[in-house]
Length: 483
Image (cartoon, rainbow, N blue to C red; front, side, top):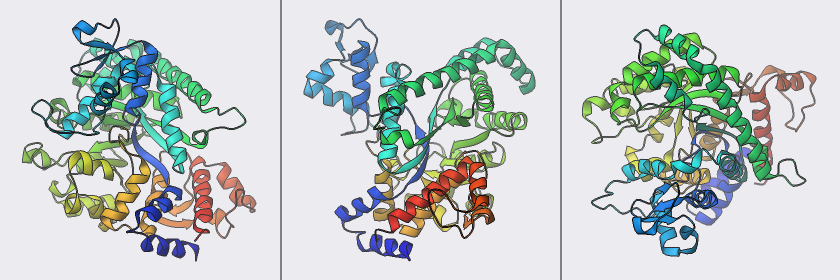
């Protein structure tokens, strides 16, 4: 059987980096379900955008700032990061975790990681098209077929609306105030921002030309991010905006709460934010929810915060269908039952393995990947902020194999799970979650680009998810036939 031959080959090259990378580079990788757009674009690109926009870079902080530049005040033209090799490398290091060395002023890699976003923030909203082109190209080049990337479609309008409306303990009344205060314009502007970005992306990639880039074949969807460290009225307004735009635009497939979980409002308002989601889920039951949860480690916060059941509450109160990171699962109340619950409810963990090792120092037995796999919890490998970590998805697959003895069958299951738990429209190709038997309509059909059976063709025509899964199974067939 071809799958067994591929599995045996992977086992034989596990300790041979050259052959292992060759194998993993060619392997179909499904979808990346946990990807922050601004963290997925490399520092070199941000430098180029700053040069194009005529911006400056602060020589002391390496933050990109608007003109005018003034060398006497330490505001150097961004073009200096092109011509001055030493300065260029200092900027790249500041906008990523490359070459990180603890100092008195910059003592922690995690804090350095989060600080990068503020340094390149000025140029991001102006260059979404180029940014999407970069991340979809990289995804396509690694044999990914699907990408969900997190961004803020309205580019901050909902935050301003929430500040204007103010807080109301009555969620229903506050939602009505937000809707009446101009939410329709927020949604319309968000959709136009996506339209403009995708048009620019397709232009950069040459998608309408004779030789389209590999990124053109990647199915791209968006998760509306909510900045959870903001004041509660602004968080609620962002949530409403996310649910509204996801209800209006099929490209926006869900919402997620972002920013470091140990920020004051993210911790202090956690239960309140889950209640907000509980209420809004009742109003918008068709909108998907995936949540950063349990993104804490020992020593980072008080033990009581580790024990506060953030993962369980995200699932049971916040209605999360997927969990991002889930690092503190062993510190939750009754962790054995929690893992069993996640397995039973098919709550997928978006595991950013490589990032967890570099940014959180979660290696060996501290890493949660084996815990979830042993517990039968569905897992997909995801990049998180691949550019800040200076990585790509293939490297996450390599770490799973080299560091945690993940075999081919498990890698393939994670790839399949990435598409089965993707927020794509339509029924799954599989009879049930984690039961990878083909549905009756397509059972016994030979894997071809277009199945012979009319019932299977009709089923695939009615489901975007199943079509992508069928495509991926064809890719697996071609890949495994080489062994």
